[in-house]
Length: 398
Image (cartoon, rainbow, N blue to C red; front, side, top):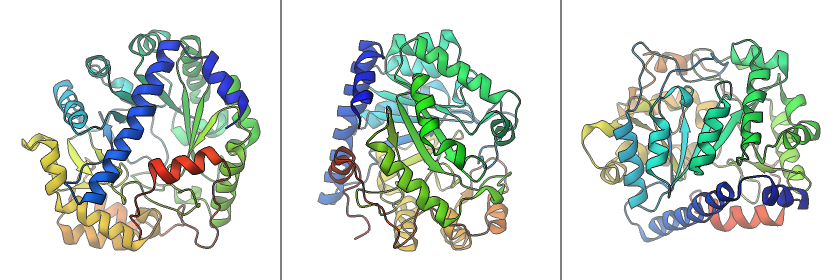
């Protein structure tokens, strides 16, 4: 981490917003991972460290490779269900939530839930096009929300990737509203063939920092959903180049560069396979991760969340299956074997489209972030320490 990033974090965000970020997200997040690791070591009941929740399947865009399809009527988690999920997670020491959609800003009651839990932290995954000054002002007032704004390319690529028009300009306008309201701002990008040169670059990192972004999450494009566009998937050399760029950039970047798919030694891992996080879809289905839309359990069936995670043979079987199949992303590397596993489990398609199994059957195998013999260890001492002792030190792969 660079001195310029430290200076920016101390001077740019609102002090109360920064304090909530440091305490609710930083300290409590580390404590949640520590509790999770101790539960695993002691053989206690399973409960993930973090929870990702897709609150609605409504969206104003139609992106390539998106696994979410708007339904009629829409599938959406009501405020009381969301409130209950947050309360039950906090009772287990988990205070961090990734909020996804669709586009979560289309959920009218979402900020009521944020307001009910000032001691929790919410990472809001948004395309940014609906981020107004009023919404950014409300996030500043609450202090416990960080917008993670998706940027998928330059002007031309963004429109093609997102299925809209003037998406790039609208997204950057959302970033500017957040900057003016002095939020801790994140950006994320799904790296694929059409944007890798533009976005995995020092110029892009500097541009985002200049626009007020404080952290940038890189992840690899997955050709899934009803519009998979497999020709955008990266090849192994491009994946290794992306990993090298991330590792090298961490030490000089004016913002924090994030990934969740490599440990301190550069070995691939899957957060769902190690059990660090699972996903709840807009219909209440409990899924291994957002792109794998298959489930046997649902939060609306009356069981407490702790019992659901403890007793879910499907999630446990998935973790075992995924770990023994690959260190990478099983839906990318072996969709045929994943389909056979899901059928054997009797998992239902929870996509809302009714085409999940057909989509898996049509998928071709692609390289994910697991490129054996090409591991690149962390070169930032801070990231190496954090990944080794706080986030990925679970020994899940033996």
